[in-house]
Image (cartoon, rainbow, N blue to C red; front, side, top):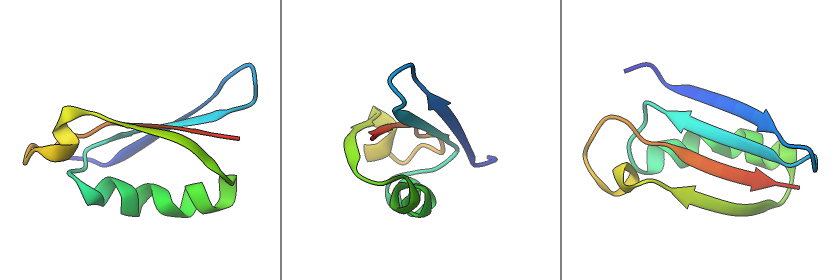
Length: 64
C-alpha cells in the first residue's frame, strides 16, 4: 500500500496530519520530521489499526 500524509490547517492555524498506509510505529517514523519542523504536538489520536497488523493506519496530529 502507498504511504500518504494529508496535511490540513484549521481556522485556528493548527496543522493536522492524517497518515494512511502504515502500521504501528512506522507512522511515527514517517511523521517525525514534520512534527519536528511544526513544533509542539498538542495531541495524537491513533486508530485501532495502529495496534493491529493491518496495512492501514491513520493518525491525527494537532500542532500549534
